[in-house]
Image 1 (cartoon, helix red, strand yellow):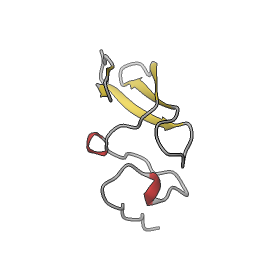
Image 2 (image 1 turned 135 degrees about the horizontal axis):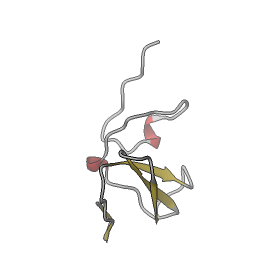
Image 3 (image 1 turned 45 degrees about the horizontal axis):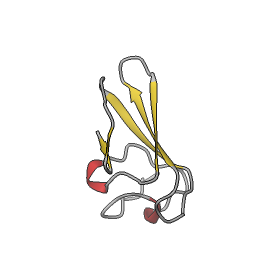
Image 4 (image 1 turned 180 degrees about the horizontal axis):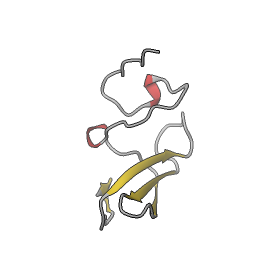
Length: 82
């Protein structure tokens, strides 16, 4: 996996979690990538200062109160119906 100009080795199938440590601030600022192993749940942490590109992402969870502008998405997401 490549984060900006840094190559991060991914040795097992993993989920990538992006954590913005200063939400709402302009980039670059501290953020973190977590690689969670699908095999045993172990976590590898990679500190960075930039988010991933929108083209490389797939949103799997949208937390309560998260607005479209807070997401790395080319287009707004449809709201869930209750």
